[in-house]
Image (cartoon, rainbow over all chains, first blue to last red; front, side, top):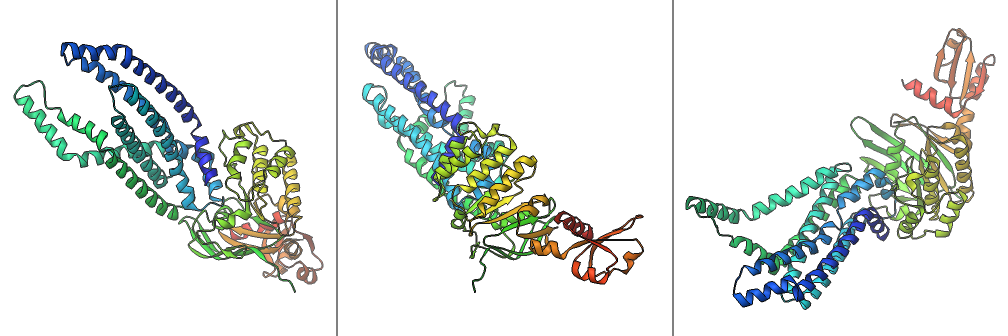
Length: 262
Length: 288
């Protein structure tokens, strides 16, 4: 199985190069952020806020932090898309070679999941290390808040990857574009179905505001979502684990019927 | 008395695709032999090989490798099998070194030294992407991989098709070397009967998903013959003996299935030895 994981990693070489550049970029941005938070504009904004009691200065700090968080999530988002591995295997005709190897089907399939989670693990590890450093060196963000965001992002990407693997097995080689669209669609539909109550609430709120001709609506749902991501990241992590197990079980059942697809 | 072990055994194997059916395929490949698996394109050779390797699921029948049933979990058995396909199957960005790294973590008996020795012998670069290899080089790379984990059985699906005669001969020499060891067996599928005639001990001939002929190559060649006679004389030839015949304005030519009997019955007619290609063509033509 280790050999197949190595092969999958080789297939993701290009993405890994991008990943390395992104990591370098994130480190540079983090250093700049720390410098700014201690001695630059972010520190200045904090001082102004305390001095003048003008809360608009928090916007500068929030925007700076948001930019940093988005940058920090890039390594996890760019680290690997299994659709690329399936595409490379399909082009090469590797499925026949793979089927003739002394590796049982369940292990051949498991290697796909191991590859992607190992890569996510690297991304998460780097991000968590950075979060620890940032949390220690600045007073704007906390380690726990960043940790929650990182784990939530990794969980969402894991759900996407698990769906990609399942759809790749279901549809076979050469359908990677559909696979990506289907995976995103499945996630979007699930998100909407789970949040149908909240969406209704937001819609009602928007309608009420329109009737009253009031410009600013209730945007508390945004803070709720952010708090959920920061504090209840384990819920997303559990969902990701469930989806991964489900995807593996369903894909394994499919490979029994459609041998030679993995 | 020591009995011959069969490395591959197929018994009434069926696989139905709707538009093509592998119908009750049965044959054996004895240990230490080279078995030529002949048939025209689309006859069912690749499907049979895929079934043997458990790449596809059979509808019915029994398949045994090294005496053990192939039952959907035969990964262990594949440790002793080297496989060569008509297309390389490795990613174009991979180098021979990459393949070595991958394979040494897959095969328990992977022998790096043997692999690099083969690469050297085949003059294959170790650091060059295999996507830039010629067809001959790609086949050689596959053979190097197949022979580097001390496999007892080599299964090859059209390995020589599309290769120039020099490379083909070189490959046949490698196969000959491989079967010098008593417990080494080859199942070689090809529609190039000339290669099989040179190399094989056993022949299995498949057409339209059915086994037409199976057995010892020399016996098959000895039994069959090409009977040539005048157009009028052809009517005298027993139908039981004729596999397929063609009558033209010049005369008649037919493949007969018992050369000795035909020689006794028709001493006035010319009966020449038949090649595997002639046998294949006549059997296919008979069906049509």
